[in-house]
Length: 490
Image (cartoon, rainbow, N blue to C red; front, side, top):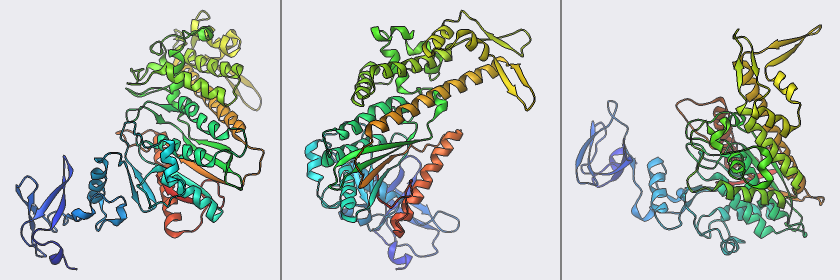
């Protein structure tokens, strides 16, 4: 079909707009190839001479017929381009509870930033056993498709949950796991499905934080494999984590927070069992006040801490181990408050032995105060023949202190993940599994950190891998190089 036949009078188009992104318009005069402009009428009845051609803009995008607007699958649209996709998603989103739309095997989700009553057990039962296109688009339909294909094709499945920070990835991943926990149940009386769900509040406490884009942003990647027996009942699970943002422990940008667990513990510091930690308000600690806002609107850190402790107990982490975890968290806060003073020569520094935070740190971790005081300000250089003791400047000592804080937190994080995996592992033989990947959100700032570059790169590579497997059906492995299908992305 020629351009002359497409861009005729009454044809509706989309034109770019600096404020609305895309604006609807209608052609009011037949366009002939080579003409320098299109004559358009906007929705407010104003006319516009729209320049096109070599010296103007490309011809505008064509609009879909009204009968197709609001389709629950974007691939059903006559024209599939950016303005058509955005308009269709907007129309659906404005309808009650229509936050999901298919795009082939991909599910597009728009975060409503509100609690919707579309995730109850009765909804799970309604989607169980249904084909993906038989009911309205939903995260449960994606989960059911993965569960069904695992049984039908005898192949492991994976669901990728990707998107920018704040898009709702972590919540979507939790709903997918809730679906499997409900329809799969457990093969015995171990209640492993409850333990899988109980891991979520723990991982959010130690791995999520408030950013400028998201009040509960995952600052690490999480891949959970849910194992099934031959009759496709849950028998266990395994979690792998990637790229924990360790730098957040010692630095947060303006209006951002450190990991939730720090604020949860400070908010509960008045409880009798935590008085020995020597904590006060999060405002009093350097590592929790750099963002200059310790609160999240609508979030009660003390109440969330109760849920974190309940989840730790559910996973069988003993009171003594929980106490050790909280001592480590508190010690990091005290470490950040240790005052390092410059000597007169400017090349060395010292820490006062009377520093209260140094005393708390040494006591909580069981290290010698004198040794800690010494090694905060000195470093040892070992060569093939000699060992040197070198003094550090204040700046060098602060960098070393921050590196120690990041290392301690990362080791604690890894220990908790390892313990969760021990609780979730099964002695029974695993027949198949479904993996749920909750990847960290991609973001673009004026100045991007190296960690954000790694996050964005990982997202792009995952999308490339998904497209490769989906389009060419190569049966390629995903993440762990096993015989595994990627059911769909969210």
